[in-house]
Image 1 (cartoon, rainbow, N blue to C red):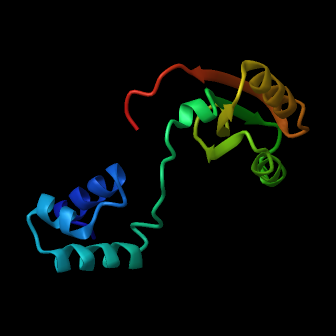
Image 2 (image 1 turned 90 degrees about the vertical axis):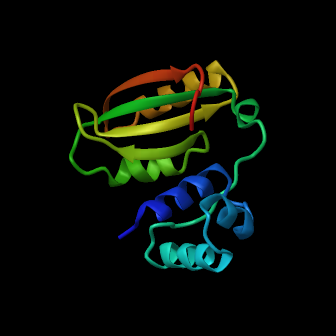
Image 3 (image 1 turned 135 degrees about the vertical axis):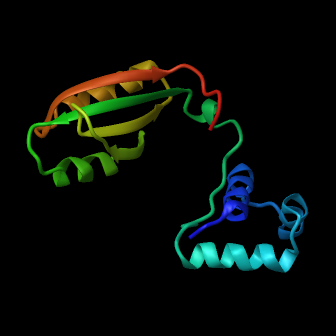
Length: 141
C-alpha cells in the first residue's frame, strides 16, 4: 500500500524522473536514503514500472495528434491489436468501455498522413466503425 509520501514522490517523478534523489528528499522533507528505499520498494512492488524521457518539442516531431475510437466487428481483438501495434503512427492503444472498444493515439506529420492512416484502419476487416478527434492543444500532461 502506498501512503501520501509515496504519492508525492510519484508526482515529483512524473514531473521529472531524472531528479536527483537528494533533490527529491529536500522537496519531500525526508532523508536521501528514505527516498531511495521508497523508490526501490515502489519499483519492486511494480507501482513504478519504468522511467521514461520526454523529447524536446514533441509536437514539432509529430504536429498532428488525434485520438480515434474503434468499434469492433467481433469480440476478439487479437488481430486488430497486432495490426495497430505494427503502425508507426499509433503511439498508444487502449481498450475502453462504452460503445467503442479501442482508443488509439495517433501522431502524424500532416493531415494527409492522418487521413491515410485512418483510412487504412477503417478498412481493416475487424473494424466496424471509427470516430476521431484531432487534438488542438495540450494544457496539462
